[in-house]
Length: 437
Image (cartoon, rainbow, N blue to C red):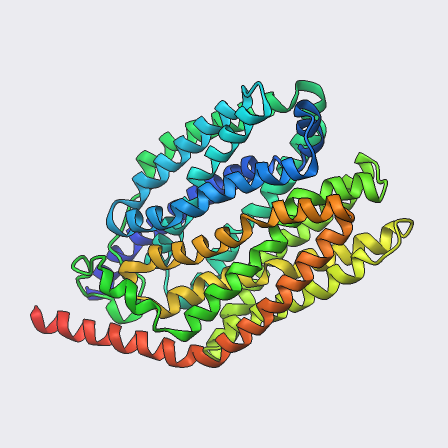
């Protein structure tokens, strides 16, 4: 009888979790397509407004600055209020700002409207914290890896839209399409994504009333006493430099400096993006697997990914333009390992922070990431104007990744103590809650 009751209690949660993951996947896929679409559309947009590389960098930096500034706000909101409704609002903002960008008549107007698209980019911490309340720690890496498949697939979808449709219907019409999808999806999210009590996914808190665990500033302050989390934050600051440089400059580099045609570019980038997509769940799976053996497991998987990605890119960028196949293979190797850290870093943050401030913990990390990365496109543009796009990509990516390896090694040293500290606190909460009942 008790088993049947437990099964009845568990099934709705399973259905809620599955529905939520599916909707989050669709939202992130379409949102990433819209967000990353501007990279493949670089040439027609620059031609429309007669832009320099520095202006191009400023354009992308604007959206990153707006998103960076709003991360703490979205994090606080998602720790305080209904995360499903907030995501619906973010989806509506995404669709609306993309529509406004499509009608921009001048560069200055487009700079302002495109920067406004960063408002919704900082809404992701709420999604990730909700997932942590729907799944136990041992399974989160795989779920985050699955959701983050959407970034490379969205990039691929954006690339296909740009290369196949932009020349036929124009880049503005492509923005109309993706903006409309954001508005439609906001309605779907509003009625179908349900929030759950914070802490529901923790093993120690099963069967314990968790609604009383509310956001508080003291808990936020305690995060900065966790040395592993500080190291994770520092690596995040530098870790997104390569992503932004590659996303915003790789197409221009392949076309202008390597002299590849659109067809060759597509044949190189499509498999690279698909392998990047495979890298997210592969990294999450490896992190979960190693985590079962050692509390350092997720961060070990992260170091493997960062180091291998750095080596692959270095050799790819030093391959002659005539060696197209070798260049493509090395770029694919880089693409596969690049995302290994991403799902593991998110899981690691939740491995050391209490449930009621996880959106804020993630938001702080994302704030530092985007604050650092906001300057990356502009710096890359200035270096490209002074030297070449290829040199800019090499200098920024390899330097940033080398620093990430150092910070991750420090985090590996500190992480066991911080994880043990969290579980002691969760166990104390469970004892206190049961005694109160």
